Amino acid sequence: MAMADEAGGTRNKRLGRGLAALIGDVSTDAPSGGGNADDAAGAHGRSGIRKIRIEYIRPNPRNPRKTFSEDDLSDLTESVREKGVVQPILVRPSAIEKGTFELIAGERRWRAAQKAGLHEMPAVVRDVTDQEALELAIIENVQRADLNPIEEALGYDQLVADFNYSQAALAKVIGKSRSHVANTMRLLKLPNAVKDYLAQGLLTAGHARALITVDDPAALAEIIVQKGLSVRDAEKLAHDPEALKKAKGAALKPADTVALEKRLSDGLGLAVAINNKPNAESGELKIKYKSLEQLDQVCRLLGVSN
Image: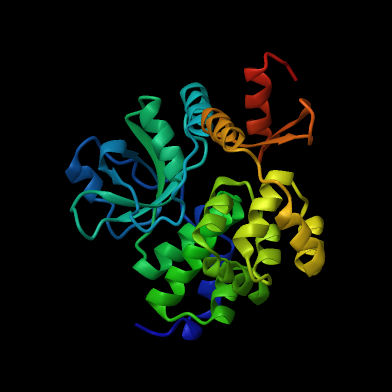
C-alpha cells in the first residue's frame, strides 16, 4: 500500500469535505435496490444514493465512535418515525459477507432506523479501501462533533498505526491543523482515570491539554471535576505549583456524593457535578449538555417548555 504522504491532492480535498461532498458527487437516479440479498449485491462496485434493506447493513468494527447515548438515540428514533431518515448513510460493499454492506458513516441513524421499525433506508454506496473507510468515518464524526476527545485520539492513532500516516499528512486529510492532531493524540498518554473523565464529558479537551503538563494529572483532573473549574482556572493551577499543592490538600468530595453524581449522570445520559459548600447544606448541581437537543431533553424531564 502506498504511504499516506503520497496520496493524491484531489482525493485528500474530497475526503476533507466529508460525507456532504460524497453525496454531491453521486447521482440520485441510482437503482433503488431490491428486497433480497441478490438485489443488494447488485450495487457492488457502483456509487449512488439508493434504498438498502436494513438487514443487509452491518456495523463498522473500526468505527471510532464507541459511545451512543440512549437518550439521544431515543430522540432520533422519534424523529425517524415521523420524518424518516433525512440524510443517507454511507456504506461500502462488504468484503466478508457477500450481498451485504458495511457502514462507514451514519451508525447512529442506522440504529435509530432499526428502533423505529424501518425496513430500508437511503444510503450512498462507495467502493473504498479500508484506509479510506476509516478516514471518512473519522472525518464525518469530527465534523459533526460526535466524538469525545478520546475517541477522536484513538481514531487518529489507528490511522497512524495501520496506514503509516505522519501527523502532517493526517492533518491534511482530515482538515485539521497539525498541532490539533498532535495535541489530541497526546491525550492517549494520560492516566486511565483522566481518559474516563474525558469520555464521560466531565473534562474537555482544553482541560486535558492543561493536564498533560503536570506531574500528577489524575489529581488535578479530580480537582477540576469536583470544583467544576473552567479551562482557564485549570491552566492557572497547572502553572502554579503552590496553588496546585493547596488544592490537592483540600478535602475531596465524599464517596456518597460521587456515587450520587454517577447515578444522576447515568440516569440523564449527561455529565452531572454536585458541589457542596464547605460546612453548609447548600451547594450547586451542574448538568452539562453538548447540544440543544440535550438541553431540550433536560427541560422535558423538568416539565419545562421552551
